[in-house]
Amino acid sequence: MRECLNSVLEKTTTFGQKEMDKRFHKLYHYCSFYGSGFCRSNVYFLLEEIKKLYPQIDLSDFKVLYLTTENRINRETQKAKFYVKDAREGRSKSDVKSHPITGWIYHFILEYNGRIYDLDYTNQISSIAKSTYIKNFFISDHSTVLNSKMLDTNAQFVSPEEILLFEVDGEKFVDNVLAGIDFADFHRYLENNNIRKQKLIEYMSGN
Image (cartoon, rainbow, N blue to C red):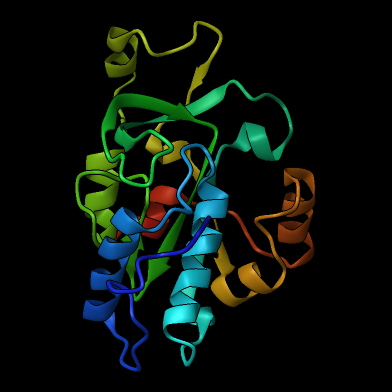
């Protein structure tokens, strides 16, 4: 189910930012592991595919970024959401249409060499600068969501300034199969390994 087009994604011994961008673009379009609503698994399988293509690389050079809300971490409510625009939707591997506004309680993305890779971001199917990613993808104006009638009347709007971020080593994310455990165990993993929460805006600043 997760095979890629071998003619497009042959193994190679070279690797760098340019090569990563090229491969990510191919994986975005041609690999069948993508599933809408399964961002944690998508990142896991993306790292697996990269490792298959470049067996020599150290996945610790990659960072898995877990974006979420204070409410979710504290197990208070699932109603607190942050909103993004033009997110990818559709389970087909070739379906890259976007939804105008989408509300999430969490999201997983990949960072490599200071650049962001997001299989759900449709405006730039390549690496993207952190500051551009924040500016172009996340909705900071509550009224934008209200006017679109996308906000549940019981939902709590979470601004980009309030979004939390946890950085997980890519190698450990794969080796511990962190995409396959429930979120209570995943949050315990973060706590037990002293992976501190950060503010998304602060983490993404300066790039």
